Length: 533
Image (cartoon, rainbow, N blue to C red):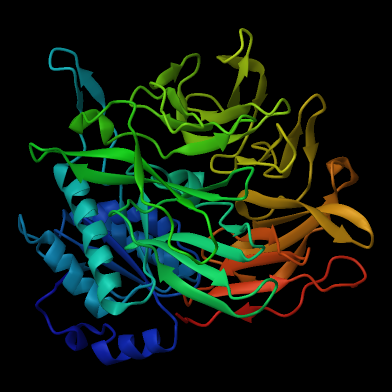
């Protein structure tokens, strides 16, 4: 394995000039930054054909690790993945890891940076000290935290989007990209604001990026604009309230007065399209500011009730669900722990048929997703033991219809929708991975229809539709002709047309708009959104 100090041209690796040319041509690559070669195996197994992959290790690792990585690189090459010849060892020293990783990013100039979980899961609890016991090598978490910090600095330096994904250590690639991610990407990241203009929101290394239509239904956009805010961890939840305001939820790491770091849920509101959002406010943490327990909190999900109250849900350190409510007066309730089933870090919050929120979560120890809802007595959370579904990990999402969820059935990978009172309905589409995004109320030949988008093989963007409220009629899926490095999104613009959005391998937003008056569901050619201010 080569070390950072060696001349890269002697190692057969791309030189600085070649990498710079690639970035100027908008073809960013992938950098996998880990503690040792063994930590790169699962992230590399998730890579598909596309941009080249560089591997950066803080330490050279053992001979067995290096041999295993060599086999993994050969397997990746057989899948069409271009992996640069040998990993780069940065020989990180305590206190210098962030600077060393930053040096590597400056040379590699990646679009996507993959590392491991910065807050590894505990293996047990020290009952005497009441503290979680983490058995993972300390270097894994410290390198991940240094990588997040370095990517944040690098994006601010270069002014181009940089995206970070944190892979759960030990999570097999067979679970799929979304289920292996510590901080999930949003599924509903294209939304229509109060004034009718569309905005797109995606998490990047340096914070939330936003693109906004300059006029309703137009092809000109502003952005990507980096929204001001705290140093967020790389994930995002996007929710819209009854007034049309957009609410963003994330996790951040911050310091206590004694210098210890903890993680809390934060939230901001976008009132006017294209304008600065409100300040980020803390929604707290089920474990307060306990530095050890709070760092393991799951990524938040959120929904509004019929009275305008905001409900936030998060997986706690005990693998249960914790929730709290913010009333219309801005006051927060205490955290409440929902009992019944241990859950994985995959929560979906939505509005039920009664207008009250409900939350679905994939079970930790069984192949099922379970529903909690507010039942009797009023306001009390109830576990619906009969409302479970069998999803592929990482495929659970809210459907536009109240109380409905979509998922891929674990037995066939087909997309299904769980309709209240009617059970599961298959929507086909067994190819590809991950969840489905959808929007209702799209006019197609005089009918109100629901348009769906999902990821197919190798990131292909697939589109389908069915009559509103009638998924049993089936869905015909078609390839929209572009690939995306994030799950594609769909919304209805201010002129009533369906709009599909994705992010290309060059880091640029792409938009396809429904053709008015077309016979069936048809879209105009893709528009590449050029960076503007």
